[in-house]
Length: 130
Image (tube, rainbow, N blue to C red; front, side, top):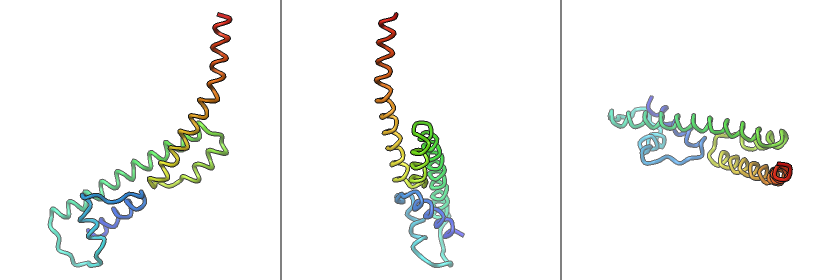
């Protein structure tokens, strides 16, 4: 039924840590009432179905992004740190993904800084030896 579809969308926006937007108003209203005998127009029904589809797409994108972030962290960090970060940031909630992205950026910057001295030394040796 339509309330089930609306509640499914609600579950997803909560899981993502996001707030519903203006396009989700009808689904929000349906989630707020506990009534099984609701008369709703076709336009409203389509809006709720669209809401559920849109939130499902956002959820799928968040799952994909989290997997990409976990893979990248495992590529840039030590295995111990990577597993720690992936465990700490294992949900698709927006704040968790953003925090993991920040930690990944820190790891990349630290790696570049560490490699910088080595690159300069190699450049110097190349210039000296030709």
